[in-house]
Amino acid sequence: MVEKQKRLKKLILVMLAYGGSLLTLFPFLWMLATSFKTNKEVFSSGLSIIPKTFSLANYTKALEVAPILTYLSNSILVSVTTTVGVVITSLLAGYALSRLHFPGRNIIFIAVLGTMMVPHQSSMIPSFIMLKNFGWLDSFKALIIPFLVYPFAIFMMRNFLLNLPKELEEAAYLDGCTRLQILFKIFLPLSKPAIASVVIMNFTYVWNDFFWPLVMTKSVNMRTMQVGLSMLKNEFTLQWPLLMSATVISAIPIFIIYICFQRFFVQGAVSSGVKG
Image (cartoon, rainbow, N blue to C red; front, top):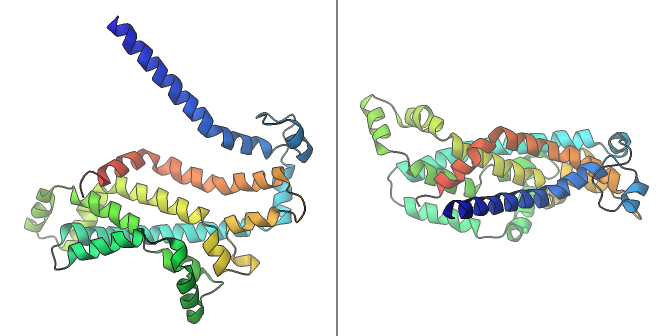
């Protein structure tokens, strides 16, 4: 009787897991299916997943209507550059706030946490004025430099490094290693889960950001993918197949990043929150 109850509970959990997965995947499947449909079929077939005829015409037309490849390359450049910068700054700051003892360390960490509580929109106007005075508007400087530091990444990296054994650091000191050698030769290889989590979250955030590139850029050649998608919206009508095909292209880098780093993601998120 007990064994049957366990099997029943397991079956229910599996069914709930599959049901939740289908609900989560359905919008993506509908987006992919719509990208192969005609505009007439979209409004006549309801929420059908399988198109009547598969055609790449929407992808070809999307590339003709707007410079999608330019938007795509801009987003890749901005997202990759800022993500690399965030990994470096969060690793250095996290190491200093977790392994070094100096006056005001906790105050600095609290200040970093405080910046996470300030809405991004509240600093938009001061940031715009500052970047305008620098002459950085409509340039990659405005899209990259303000995002080279990510407070939540520092928080995650600090907590992750705080959990690493002190014996590793002490043994390295006895072998004559410097601070930087300990960081890059010992702690860096052990921090792959936290780094993977930072890469996924930061890349996704910067890639999907719409408002900041919209405000900071004005020329077509400087627009990112999310801003460029709005170019596919007609003034009077919205062609869903065209928009969905461009959206599928926009989603490909996110899927690639997640597939490459997903096996470290859960481990890094859990490990960084064990100890504060």
